Length: 570
Image (cartoon, rainbow, N blue to C red):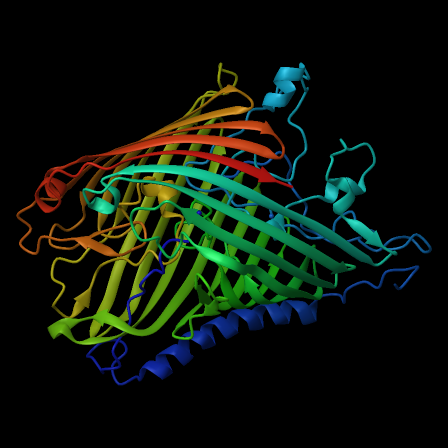
């Protein structure tokens, strides 16, 4: 919602006259880890103050995402009556996907919600219950897909029910699932070169999910991602042969008020908030994953996560290993006072020791980037809104980091109108640097985002040193069909800094600023057909029209992209 490994900016361990003066890099890292530890301690204190997890009577043997169900994350009352065995109705405690920016509101009421229903004449009074988003792209991790409806009588049967929620006695539960996708890509002026590229991508995923009551979970997910026929060298996010996307264990700590607290250890995907900073990045072939530890406590009105992880290095022909020179840790809280309205509050820290940051006087070193931010989003009386602010500080080689980003948007949902139209107007800003050789670093670091969703699907623009004035319209010609059109106008925030791509990599720069700041205009069109709950087809076209900056820095380059994607999930 992974792109090439995002180069986080590293700091050389050189004392500077700053808030970090006289403090070694290791001490700075220890200080920030102490902050993370304090957050975990708060969670632990809540645990110890809470009632212990109930002992069940009787036998002791997770697209742009839209959903048709609102899962209850509480496990309170999960113990069954004596002699009845364990009550699985609220297990696993699934976390519903957060609303991204430019979110869309799915159709409701009577209609045909799949193409198959339309062809067979099966009109429904309301959207069917489904664990999958009715869209080809789905950033929700497989471990957060919600099949708990199968514990209630009267649900609509499915051909794959026999491999879902297999009860092994009263206290054990086993499920299997997976997905396959194929995408055809046709790019012209690919990667801002004069090269055209036509190629094919395939990806297979398969997972197994095992629970002991709601106390212990083991989850494993296999992935195989390949490309065929590429003229250019495959990107790190294009190919990952035979590896593990997720491999973790969850251990329940306690019930805290109206929600369970868990500790997760192992390889795991992360997805938070708008996905501007942390996303599974479903657009790319390999997706993005991490390895480490996470504690989480989710209730109907408040979620709190604390994590320490390392990004995974994709190794095409070997098993992936975590990046021992990067550490990513943070706290993320989400307050949900009213349905469809939320507020995020977070602190994140990326400690990058790969010696890639180039600071003042070309001194090469490491970096540590701290991000604090908050976001509000929701809808009210058909009005749609979102506002997110992010500030960064830390060290970049021998420079002090001070950077920020703002994302804002307002829209309107024409509820009841034909085709369920929704319209957004947005402005996104991320700071750049007017002097890359002084003592300050002002370029924002986008961390691990779902960049394509916000900054255009051609991938030439990232959330760094940019102004983006954009608009979006969503239409549903039928409940099973979704059409999205986007327009972007891009300007460099500082014309002496780089243009950064969707991976956060610097691509083009005019150090004099004489090429101007106008990067260009991008249009993006996507049309999705929800064939049925297991099959989706997505067709898209994007075009970047060069502005003054691109005309000078990349003459005769005007990229476009056409793609067709087929998805199968079970």
